[in-house]
Length: 256
Image 1: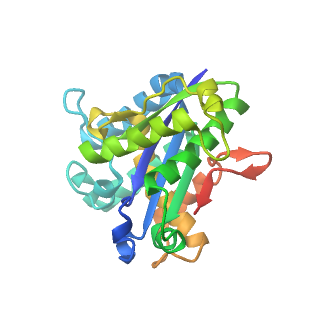
Image 2: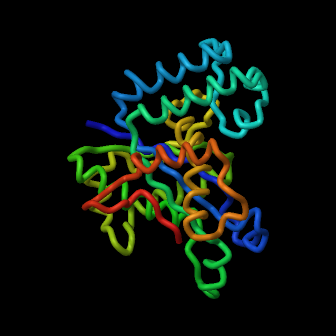
């Protein structure tokens, strides 16, 4: 059995922006999905939803993007109709609940990180990615499986930054995990980076849940500056059954 970890981020890794409340936190959310399941179930069901509500066509597929869906921006302007919005919201929640995936989400307080480590600091990307890869490795070992990793493209410099962090972890491991353990379950020493525009279902899945998962972690740590929105709360309720568990403990959430 082969899995893929699809990663989406909320925020940016720039430590200099950490004093700004809008840019204080960086989170990486990984969605683990069996690749056979992606082809047989997730992708066709996601495309069916798009064609039913938004006239998606194979030549010009609609790409699910949480922010545009939330604000009913093109190509989701049909959601300005309250009845259609209600039907779509119920169906997408039902789909997220029924789809088989496992979540690992890491959120870093960059302001605290900057203040704690005055001289030397982990790169925020590297710090979050290391924790996600450790837990992904636990998951693969637990399931006697192998897998690889794909992240959403953010552009030249950011893509290179993430690839560089992944390569370093592959070569050197972490404080808690040897590189040999990574080599034992990860099938590629390179991080795959693809734009969401390629209509990759796993990346769209990660996009749909990354923001609610990040907000949940902040809310649990009394760091969310606004109430959880009703739809986001419903997504969070579903995620409680999707977070990675190990030894009876939730290992799918981490606040740093």
